[in-house]
Amino acid sequence: MPIEVRGLTYTYAAGTPVQVIALDGVSLRIDDGEFLGIIGPTGSGKSTLVQHLNGLLKPQEGAVLVDGVDIWGRGTSLKDVRRRVGLIFQYPEHQIFEETVYEDVAFGPRNLGMPASEVDRRVREAIKLVGLDEGILTRSPFELSGGQMRRVAIAGVLAMGHPTIVLDEPTAGLDPRGRDEILGHIRRLHSERGTTIILVSHNMEDVARLATRIVVMNKGKIVLDGTPREIFGKADVLHRIGLAPPEVTELMRRLRLRGKDVRMDVLTVDEAREEIVRLVRREAGAVHPSGVETRC
Ligand code: ADP
Image (cartoon, rainbow, N blue to C red; front, top):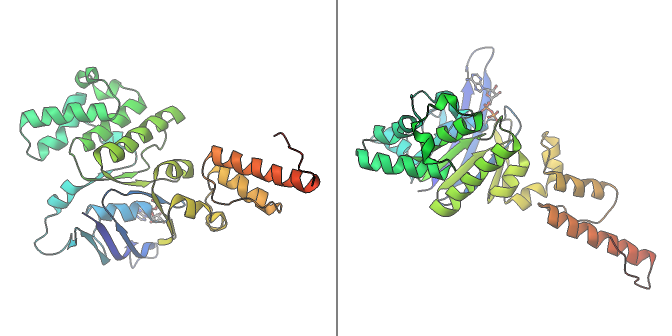
C-alpha cells in the first residue's frame, strides 16, 4: 500500500498579503514497511505535508495517491483512506475527552463499526502496546500524568489498526524518559506489527536511531532524501538550513574542520569511539614510525 505524493503545493491564506507557501512542489513515495523520518526546521512544511497523507488537507496542486489511487479522485472514499493511514497529531492528549481511559481508546474502533468483542480486544492490545497496565482502563484520563495521557491518546489511534501511522512530533514536551518510552513503542509497532511509520521530528538523535530513511525539508521543499548515514554525512547542508546533526556527527564535523581525517557518517557513540581510536592510533603512528602502541 505505497503512498505517493506528486507535485504537492500548498499555500495558506493564498492571495492575501499574509500568504505563506508551505509546500512547493513536493514529490515523495513511501513504501510498505518503511520507517521514514521527516525532519526540517520549524515552518519547513512537515506538518502541512503529513496532513495531506490521510486527506486532512486537500492538495491545491498535485495529488496524493494511496495504493495507486488518487485519494481525492471521484469514487474514492476518504473514510477508507483514513482506515489505512492514521495520523497522530502533536499533543494528541488535547483530544482526549471520554470519562475513562477505556472509553477513550474504544472510541476509534467503535466508530469504525466493530463489534463490542473486537473493540474490547483492540483496546486491551493497544494499551499494552504503549506499555500501560490494563488497570488503567477504568481510570479517568484526566488524573493521569502527562506522559501517561500521551500514551493513552496514542493507544486510541493504534486500536484502529492502521497499516500506516503518521506521528507528528509525538514526543514534544516529554521528559527524556517519557520520550524514550514512546519511541520504544513506535519502534516495536514497526518491527513487531510491520506498521509503516512516518515520524515527523526535529530531534535528529531520535530520527537517526529509528528511521530507515530520512527526508529533510526546508522552505516547503525536500532538500535531502536518503538513509540516516547518507543524510548525517551531509552535515554541512544540515547546518546551512539551521539543523543540528546528532552530537556524534557534529563531533566528527568539528574534527574535520581541524584537518583530521575522520568519517563523516558516524551515527552512534560506539562508532565515534572507534573512529577516534583509529585517528589517535594513526597520529601516534605518524609521530612514532616505530609503531609504538598508544593507549587511549
Ligand atoms: P513545520 O511542521 O515544518 O513546522 P508547517 O507545515 O506547520 O511546518 O508550516 C509551514 C508554514 O506554513 C509555516 O510558515 C507556517 O507558519 C505556515 N502555516 C502552518 N499552518 C498555518 C495556518 N493554519 N495558517 C497560516 N499559515 C500556516
